[in-house]
Image (tube, rainbow, N blue to C red; front, side, top):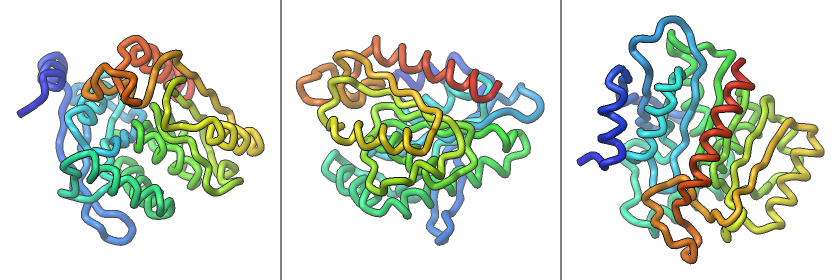
Length: 254
């Protein structure tokens, strides 16, 4: 059954189409993403790869993809975990996310596979591709950029900001926007400092906005409303973050 948020989005975006896409990574691992596009639009348009949080592709991931399609982009919800591989609870999500965070090369390959898929679409301008991600997905979007992927830019929503390999930021080809909860207990100050230094040393064009009082997962309605738990939805911060993302896309896509 669809969540109420997704059901409303479906009703408001009748011209937006979605379909599941079977694809593989470089090692041949079966993956299954979701593409969203405006069927009434003509010609090539920018594309945005949407990377899920630690629970895998969900109603919320698809909702974000549809919202991007309404904005005029081809949106592709990437599958990092693998076809049919979805955690049942937070414990399982932590184990899955930990596996990929512990193998950044694998994480980058899974994200690159999504870029490869969306680049092959006839309605995509391959010179205008970006990536966004939420929590685990924010970390993944950053890693994708650091791999040297040909992206115009990436947006991390409440993602991890550790920089395990110093100097990797020199490979980034586009701009970086980090939207961060100022009270996020899962992103220590030392990580922010190392991340900032790495980007500055590489002379990357980047922006980081911290939202006062916001904790982890502040754009996710399903995260609840109790900031004391470390993860909670913050309506004001969420709205501001998506406005910032739209302005960023206007800038990088022209």
